Amino acid sequence: MSNQPGLRLLPYEQIRKEFTGHPLRQSEVPVEHAVSLPLPTLRWSAPAYAVFAGAARRAPGSPPELSTPDRWWALAASGRHVLAYNLVSAVPFTDDLPPGPVSPATAPRSIAQAREGLRVVGELMDEAAPLFFRGETGAGTLRSDLTEALAAEISPEVRPWYRALVPDFFAWLEAS
Image 1 (spheres, helix red, strand yellow):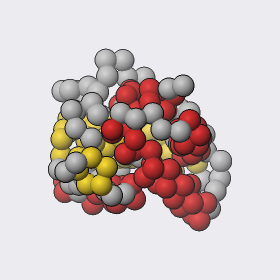
Image 2 (tube, rainbow, N blue to C red):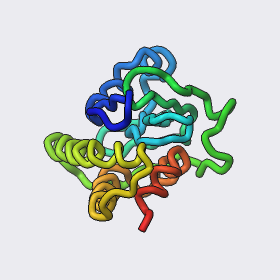
Image 3 (spheres, helix red, strand yellow):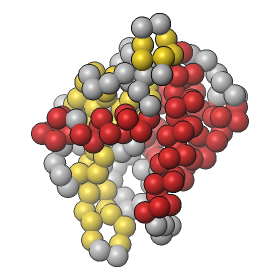
């Protein structure tokens, strides 16, 4: 996928896999941490995807309890190159991080439904991210469809953390 001269953006599904299998994830992020969905940003002067992570307490039959994110990182949109990694205690990604813990209210769904939701987000992100990175507005329907798909995947309780991490992307989504 080529969207800027000399820049090859990875498909969103591949970006998700890069975050999951990245050596930084394996060595620096405790296994009991929940990691957010990667979302696009230009905060670090280059097309990137950013995530946050925080401790998650899981108990059978109940939603996880997510602690306030304690770390965040960004990978280049073209691959595994780490643009930034920080502990929130050293370099917060915002000055006013909404506190946790939170217990996201999620409707029960099957694994197939969860996969389908991520597939839809990925399909829309593959179309939207290149426009965002190029500074193009794109179709309002694309932005609203992606906003709706993300709302289905990101519970309201943790949305403020996402907005704080990638405010530029949310501003782009909400542009009229």
